Image 1: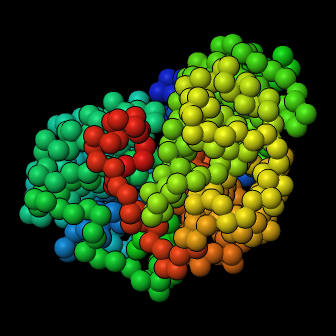
Image 2: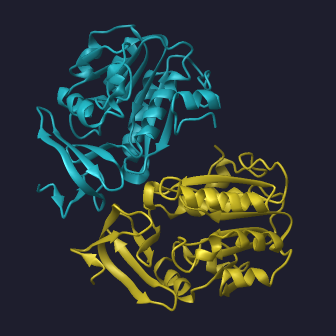
Length: 258
Length: 258
């Protein structure tokens, strides 16, 4: 495998030149080039199983929960009554209803990341494989919450970081609806964060930036923009809070009432 | 330089096996072996100047401010009237009064990290070069705040993570005094964090763990334990808050009233 050197994988990307993160690989579980991207799954010495798309780490068994929990519960716990939820991206299967452009990511995740892909087993799930942008155009006033769990804005996901995507999401929401989108990190992509947040602010009366600590993402944190059709929404005062028992039942490891 | 390969420096340590962080070096500014440790300063392609002790990144020009501001203002803004402050470690010069074991670190920082070592110019500063542990034994009921800005617990700093160090700090504090110590990250050193916090809890009626996002530290975050001689201290409700004007005057880039 020329992607590895002495059994170490090194992540490098034009988005963060001059520094790299590397991990030791015990076994290459999967490696293919799909219609959209390179898909690799590694079993590693220190991070458990790792999904890599186009050379960029998407999630590791060690720390995926902090990102998944935050991007899901930030909006879900702020909404008054989230009945119908759309997940765009999220092909690794962390959640409940989704549009993923690359069916191969879903297939590989089910096979090699079963601890994450449990979402695909849910009876509440309707799975669509296609372009989230196109999907949105055909759905109007339909969802309470739209979560955009995208990869970075250098490959198939680039259109999900544009203002017209936020406009489309707005039109697909029911009254009181909310959106939450992966929005990069302040340390590497300050311009991206600023732009994405301003796109969200332009379309939604309430908008904010939040973040989670995820060691294996560049700079160790990743942010979200969150928008609501309600005015003066207090995103840091969720309407639904979990007690310790809830947190245990749901096996939460990062998101908590603090 | 055998510390570099093709002008890249790779940080690796027994504390976090199986994954590494690397950065591109433009110029080696300094490299020596002091009485206590290896001291290297690099000018880098993406992080500005970087201080490395015994192969471990201590601070980079890109992100040092988030750590320095948090370890200083977490305790200083919670104390009623911090008049006399002791900094143990902190040889890079971020703050105001200190005991550093390795005079070479101070010398190198003054020369190569002038943007950080401004603290050494302060008239309020009395500098002691020696062992923080020994220094503390000779000072009783003297300080309002003690900040322990140490390196990791694998070299000269190991004694600063033990319970008897917290007991010594307690005896060196005036009534109402507070301590704040570097305490590792939950992602790599959960046992260290748990132990350090329990040492602090055993000695102080109020204690808590907080953290800052620092991309170039392993896992991208680093934590602090903070202890107070006051009971029921609310560390998340500081007594002193800065307004936007204060934040600008003090050139704050991370710590803020949110």
